[in-house]
Image (cartoon, rainbow, N blue to C red):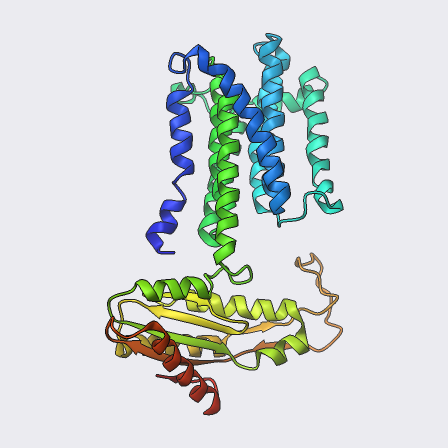
Length: 406
């Protein structure tokens, strides 16, 4: 994926959907005859999203939809009983303004678990506990907590644009920034869904005091999450889950489409089978991710996962003379990269109190062999280019490994 497409993926289509909701779902714009369909849409998005999340094992999306649905149910109850302007209504809106963005941002970072597994169901417990807390806040049993949430840190006319508590506005702003930064580093389509679901949830809470129907905005957030789920599913159909690089089929399709001269390199991790046998799958996956990260940084190149221990690097607008120095540089960087192998009893998080090591400290380094070939004209079939790159790679391996042959 090009850099322009990656940047646009942060804005489209989720940003367009939320903007359309902002323009169309305000009072006086949406006809009264359409409002029942908006309520039906909220039910459909919840049921459909729950089913798709369960079917594809996307527990993050399921949790996000449950959170949006519970928030919408709370506001619907307040509006139905004319309690929105009372103390209970203000307390619930204030609590939602703080808890909703924090939870959505947190759910966006979770690793995927099966929805119906014990660990997946355990993730519902914090949500249930917060519902109890919001109930206590609504009853006024926690006055100090309510005062903290509604405290105004800044005064002035510029702060009057929303009735939400300033702590809630800060929570939404922080959650949006956190989710956007996480997407920049991880390129996770589901994170983009949570980003725009946060924006839709903010519009729902911000507009409820202005007479806006929050159901439409919560439904919009749900549709964006479903869209991100489908995009992620399609992405993993063509991308490797370990390295997040596009796979061989994508490379073959790209080579068939290219008409201009280009340069292709095949990269193999030396002695990968031995690394996997000695240190296990986790370390071998970490090795692959490290190599993929270095190949992804090559200027003017697109990296692909080509096989179990192989990668392909395509330079679409470079000749062999221009690309080989970049390959030599990445080969040296990978050879100089070293990481400590995690012991079986070593915690994943850094402890507050460091304990002296009880065993040998294993430092792992790996090297790569690279074979490359250039396609100078469109008449030459891509399979000939791949065959030459394979032959060059074989010469690099037979010649002692850790070198570039073109």
